[in-house]
Image (tube, rainbow, N blue to C red; front, side):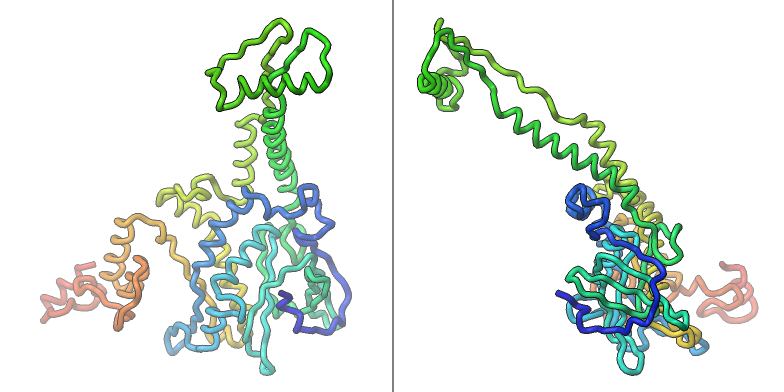
Length: 402
């Protein structure tokens, strides 16, 4: 679509380093068509994480001396809900996570108005990215887009997510060297299965004629043998008989199918590369397995997403006044009914969950007045009397209650 075509930036810079994305033609992945996302194993490994983070709800939080406010500025809320005219916030988050998993880097451009206020966010899909600096030391990124165009933006206007941040000062380490050998094994295995299936259906019977026949006679006799004994409509009931003119011998196809354990081992290694497993991919996990997956794989990227949105959308002065972006994602979505009930009941009783938050856990719409936090009277602070208590004696009783 070329979403970024209308944005132009001046290139007053010198090249510092280059990072080639997964789709670059120079990538070592082109041995297997150059697009790892075509693999069903890779796509199924990435999908659960992308879908889970896509469901995270972005909120503008302002916490200062006046208290805490959620989504105090409508324009920020609209930016998080509809970052650009072509996608929702959920779709943008999914796209960024897919790019992050494939490339260990993901980029999005923040478009600002004449006053420097953010008004749109666009994901950037590029074949390569160059880091540039100008004579003042300001950092830019030049993207080679898939349509052949180039776009250069200030790094302060780029949401940049990274994984395996090790060798380079700016970019996450490319996963090609680690993933390419595994993908080569998968490709070779798949090709071997296809060839085995084809070979097993080429020749099943060999007919040896004991006399010299013309080619057309050989074809006629072979056709008759197939129609009489190999056709499913044959009346021979699975039995074949020949005379002295011909010997019939069944050919046993060779088993070219790769070892099943080897195939499972390679698939498991790819799952581990993406920090997932068969149960997560097939949605057959239990509550504890999902919590482990969430805490080990999803939570860190949600924190990174929140921090990167915060530091790129707001200036240091705005952050100093308590503004930040927080992406909320509950790992209770796949919890058991009992766990959800315990969390909601205890949360409402103790005042850290309101009625609407509890309804959200069960996928229910909010209700009017449900945003108010309440608390059971017998859970008052230890230095305050419980509701309805009178006198020092009752106050002392409240002091002993936790």
